[in-house]
Structures are given as structure tokens and as C-alpha cells.
Length: 83
Image 1 (cartoon, one colour):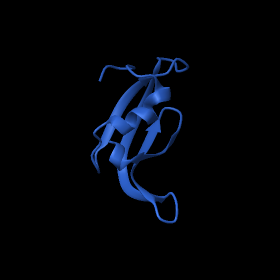
Image 2: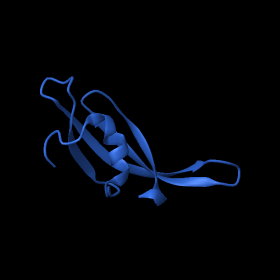
Image 3: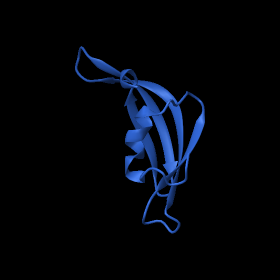
Image 4: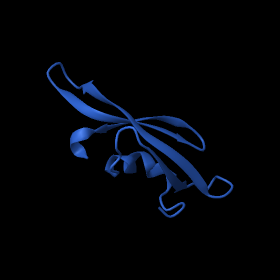
């Protein structure tokens, strides 16, 4: 992917549309105007599946992604049936 093609404030939303496979690591270079070179590198990995209880009778099956970028890191939960 072209360096800095996506603004880094939408990477978490964009991740839900990527065909990310379990156990593989992905690298994405997003644009960030505050950084010296304008690039914020993201490393993303599908780490596990999880079930979130929404009510006592309902739940959402999710893919959980772990990400690390040039400024922070964290987890993203994505509804498996929306991807």
C-alpha cells in the first residue's frame, strides 16, 4: 500500500474492512501530520476471537486485533458478522 495513503485517525475503522487472517501480522503506513516524516506506522495482528454479551440472551461474536503504532497500542473488537 502506498505510504501514508490513509489518515491515521481512521485506521481502527478501516481495520474492520481488511481481510485479516488469524496469526498473521500486517503493516500499514498511515499519514499523520504531527509526525516528523508524516508517517505513522501500524502493526496489526488478529490475536483471538471473543464473545461480547450484549444482554442476558444476546451476544456478539468478534475478532480481536492488536495494534501498535508510532504513538500508542491497543486492541480493536470487530463484529465477525459485519466483515
